[in-house]
Amino acid sequence: MAIQDPFILLSLLLLLLLLISFISTLIYRTSTPQCTCKICHAYVTSTWSIHFTNLSDWYTHLLNKSPTKTIHIHVLNNLITSNHESVQYILKTRFQNYPKGKPFSLILGDFLGRGIFNVDGDSWRFQRKMACLELGNLSMRSHAFEVVNDEIDRRLVPVLSSFSKSSSQREGLDLDLQDVFRRFSFDVICKFSFGFDPRCLDVSLPVSDLAVAFDLASRLSAERAMNPSALVWRMKRVLNVGSERRLKEAIDTVDAFAGEVIRERNKLGSCSGHGDLLSRFMATTKDPEYLRDIIVSFMLAGRDTVASALTGLFWLLARHPQVVATIREEVAEVEALTSFDQIHEHHYLQAVVFEGMRLFPPIQFNSKFCLENDTFPDGTFVKKGTRVTYHPYAMGRMESIWGSDCLDFKPERWLKNGVFLQETPFKYPVFQAGYRMCLGKEMALVEIKSVVISLLQRFDIELATPVRTPRFSPGLTATFTGGLQVRVSERRGKT
Ligand code: HEM
Image 1: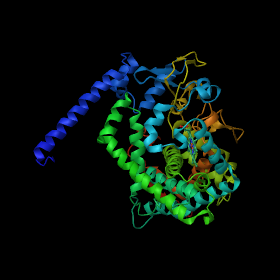
Image 2: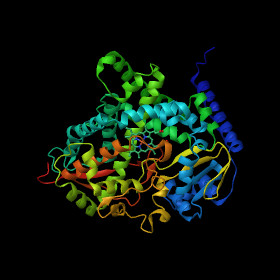
Image 3: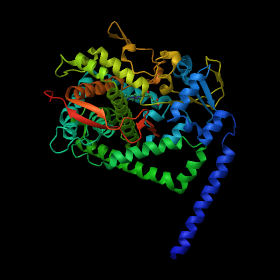
């Protein structure tokens, strides 16, 4: 019998919501580790936010003070470390004991499926091998260089020009550079990996349903991990309500896009001449779900990370005109870059990019799960089943690693006699380190450096509203809340 009276329907709905909230609270209370220590109390009551802008800033403060550089948030059953010896232990020495683990693969499973970021064991090894072949390949490097520079010349530069003070149509309008970088890197990764151009970056800054859905899916998936108990989001998922309902809708939009890319590629057949990442995987499987997971993983890998690195870097550059002047001097003799390898010749620029990501790593923290009881080199006991997190954001701000000027933006710290010297990745795990180190590092560096060179040669960029400490939004990668609002002006004689 269908209920048609709207009053009864509304009452039933209210009753259902009350029931869900009651059961959620009950589950939360019974399944969350209870702890009243000072740190856990500050976490649960959010009182840390009285003194710190971001949760990561509070963790950095705690880790700086900790003698072992490791802290335990008991209510989350999470050990967080910024100790580089422990990082090496987790990512290399005892790699087998610290997989991504089931809890995370469940949390991210709906969005990332069985893609490389969300699997361990044979499935990970296979995808890593395939991606390695693709990203390490010489002709792929020159393809990446072409895709990046085409997107800069035909889209990025025209967009900034149209917003510049000298443009007759727009008298120096504020521009959200973070939004522009996300559009830019989305186009680049899609063109590079799947030979598909989503055309997100355009002078009209079109609304892209796909990009909006992708952001939402990424944010809501990350928020699942912030629940002290997984049962809360799982119940909402079963009932298809609230954030879980929105997550499902967002994932449906992303799935429809991936399905379209696969269908188009199937139509073209094997003689399409596409030698990209998707073709490599399609030659090994026809499973559309698996191919969808691969597409989503690479969109995530290549889009948000690069955009985040660029956003943090341009915020720093706007506050350090002397660094901008030195970059311009270094690249002055090169009018246009012509190859992937040539870009590594700029040592100062390389130092600037590494220094930018030291202070603003795109992936601020990364977690694994401990399989068997263990002890870190710093003496911390790690109980089986504990979530273990290394924290590149905090590590970039450790006095014990970088010295007392660790909060200053000083590219020179990476140079010895003008030559760039890399720090061990265990002290600087921005691209992770050990067996699962990022496979797109070279491509990311080419993208970031090409953008910096092109934009600094043509434009002066200043912050529209100078903020002292950026605030980050929750998500899988670091995102400035409110974007990065800038004013752009074209440099005379440089366009
Ligand atoms: C500044 C830009 C980037 C940063 C900071 C970065 C950082 C990272 C980090 C921290 C991981 C480890 C993630 C985890 O295991 O949970 C990772 C993995 C990975 N990255 Fe990147 N990444 C960047 C750009 C890229 C790009 C452009 C691509 C592809 C073209 C890419 C491809 C990958 C892949 C395939 C993995 C998985 C490696 C594995 O699990 O074996 N990354 N990256």
